[in-house]
Amino acid sequence: MAGRPWGAPGGTSKGNGSALLNASQPAPSGGEGARPRPSGLACALALILVVTIVVDILGNLLVILAVCRNKKLRNAGNVFVVSLAIADLVVAVYPYPLVLTSILNNGWNLGYLHCQVSGFLMGLSVIGSIFNITGIAINRYCCICHSLRYDQLFSTRNALCCVLLIWMLTLVAVLPNVCVGTLQYDPRVYSCTFTQSVSSAYTITVVVFHFLLPIVIVSFCYLRIWVLVLQVRWRVRPDSKPRLKPQDFRNFITMFVVFVLFAICWAPLNFIGLVVASDPAMVPRIPEWLFVTSYYMAYFNSCLNAIIYGLLNQNFRQEYRRIIVSLCTAKMFFVDSSNNVADRIKCKPSPLVTNHNLIKVDPV
Image 1 (cartoon, rainbow, N blue to C red):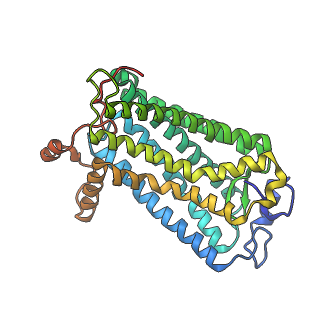
Image 2 (image 1 turned 90 degrees about the vertical axis):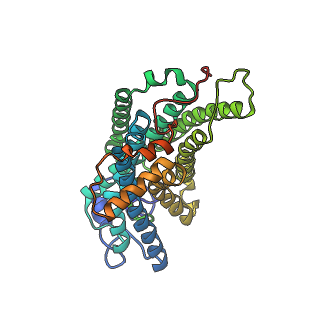
Image 3 (image 1 turned 90 degrees about the horizontal axis):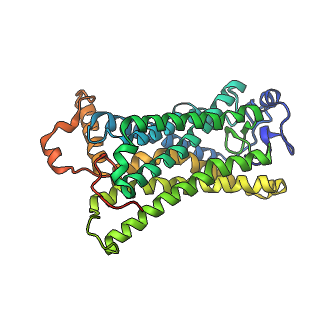
């Protein structure tokens, strides 16, 4: 993260423990870790964070319960969706509440250990999210563009192995932060998080391999899918095999929107990181409002995916409704809800919710 870590003007922190002790006192009453802020700004940031935490927890729990309850949603593709929901939940149950506490106290007073754990879990969540989004894109690409081999490539067992690999890679990617000393408190965003100014080379590496490279891979997968969609709709292909139904197109759009919103929410912060790493002299020239906005845009992204599923995917929307009704009427909500005959008649398989792909096309 750009700027003066731990409230020390200029330079970087040499001793994380002592720096945190200096910065961990609430301000302005007696600490160096924060500075007076307009009360309206603190209230706005606190409100954004409260909404994010509530929607994040409730929404992603709905996603996980929906997949567990409904057989139509229990498939290889949605293994990645559940993994992404877990990544979003991680920040809502620990780091975000600590950030909210820091906002209310106008400074970090929770100690060094909480700061390190909070920053570590934030990194685990964001890198886990982008890696899971990459896995979803590859899964969709194989499902639609290589449908004849999809069941072989993405059995439930293979999907679980892929998710396990994703989290192992995520852990490996986050661990260097502990060694490099980049997890520090920044009073501008009231957070213990990745400090971009500690090591320019490491910051560039993080942005390239943990953001830009996954974005390129996901863009390639979705571009190929879009090419196929347009070929099917415009009947460019000479054969008559491809038949893309509106429901299938909407299910593809769901995951595409998840990716686009993630890229939009996280691009400003990563762009700032590249600027700071390339030229540290640019740090004081970056407007604080831009820096704070970019951070809270990234924070807010963790609560959006569950909303997108509900808005754009009928199967998730119907299961959300059943879960809420079950909770309100005190019924058991771990019962398989996909045994309803009427639902089996209404709901048809789709690439997002079934392994039996309806689009049979030659590999592209």
